[in-house]
Amino acid sequence: MKLHNTLTRKIQVFKPLHTNTVRLYSCGPTVYNHAHIGNLSSYIFADTLRRTLQATGYTVQHVMNFTDVDDKTIRRSAEQYPDMSPEEALQKLTGTYKQIFLGDMAAIGNDTSAMKFVSATDSIEGMRALITDLYTDGFAYIAEDGVYFSIEKYKQSGKKYGQLLKLDSSNTSAARIDNDEYDKESVHDFALWKTRKGDEPAWEFELDGHELLGRPGWHIECSVMSDNNLGQPFDIHTGGVDLIFPHHENEIAQSTAGKGDVYATYFVHNEHLLVDGKKMSKSLGNFFTLQDVRERGYDPLAFRLLVLQSHYRNQSNFTWENLGAAQNRLQKWQAMADLVFQPVDSKQDNLALQKVDWQEPQKLIKQQLGEDLNTPEAITWLDRLSDDIEFLPNDPKTLKHFKDFLAFVDRVFGLNLSNRTDITPSQKDILKQRQKARNDKEWAKSDQLRDELKEQGIEVRDTAHGQIWHHI
Picture 1 (cartoon, rainbow, N blue to C red):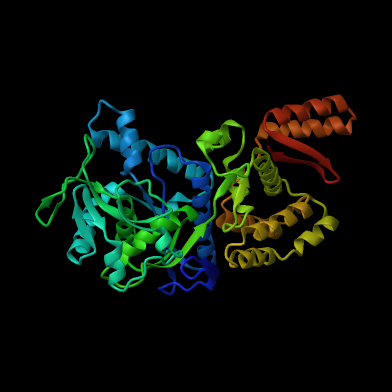
Picture 2: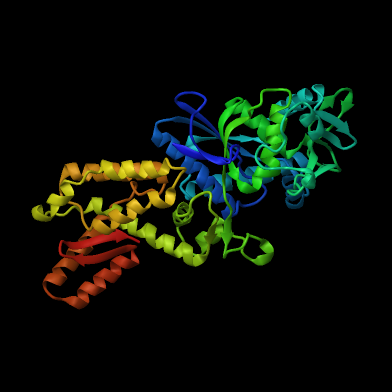
């Protein structure tokens, strides 16, 4: 399997640190509001990467974090729950949005059961320990408003700051930055720990005789949560390109200061999801969540397919027209999957389908996914099959092969094609009535029964092999 590694700026043959196990860490959401569709596209990429690694034969330990304490969560919780204590308000807000996020993840086809979710607020002790080590080793210093990481001390120790991108004097500053909404153009010493301001949630921290009641900075959270759950170094770190600098660069620095040189062996980043060709922004009115997608009548899995239609390293463009096209494509595949419930008795026509090698498309799909997750090319095999297969033969062996193929497709793409349901007995009875009406040339009655089924979410088409239905 090949992956583009941001550390080396090239596509490499992936080699895990341990023979059969891949340790994968994905930067997760800041749980202060609904995740927007750009965030969700990043999580679809991470989920697809894990699925592909598993299809390749690896066991994958996949960890994703919840950022449940930072400037945004503190500010929003105070606004939402002014009558609660800061700690209770923070827990209430973030707890609510964690559950909403997990629901969104399931709706877009991400397998949350295959992941471990960890929260920053459950990892405070580890953050205090790492900050203490950094301070003791001379890489951190105490200021009037917290503890900061010294980039200059890090470079003086022989380490390279700028492993993921080129940094020079034009974007380097000696200034400190104490907020979590970081300047992405200039290098600053960054906050490892921030002392309490006003009525904020806070944790005790004593360092070198200083009482530093406060909370962690953003970057330190991921360093500790990844190390606590995967060890260091681990295999793959994922995230959007917007996290390359400063977040991931700062993670590398604080995780390798005074230690080994390697934090993670591969950094794999996905590109932005644009909306109508522009960066998503509330001011432009193009800021959407999964709730918006649902309210417009679209299947969340159609959004997943829209994301898979673009290579993860290319910017993709979300428009409602593009989402509609993805939904039509998905429904075509779903109609193909519904054929398993209505096999056709036609020995002459069935012979060709009985000879199909169902392993071949699986091999070709895995081959494309192994080429740096080439999802656009991989999913074209589903188009080819859905174009070619108009029915399935009433042959147990062929039906089993087809069901196995759908299960494989779900394992790698997460599109839920293998969990379709049959129509009800009453709907089957309507189909029988409709067929009789057609046989008797009662066309008005036939049309009326077809419309009745459509109102129940069943589309019917008439073929040389009889009535073929699919859910809509």
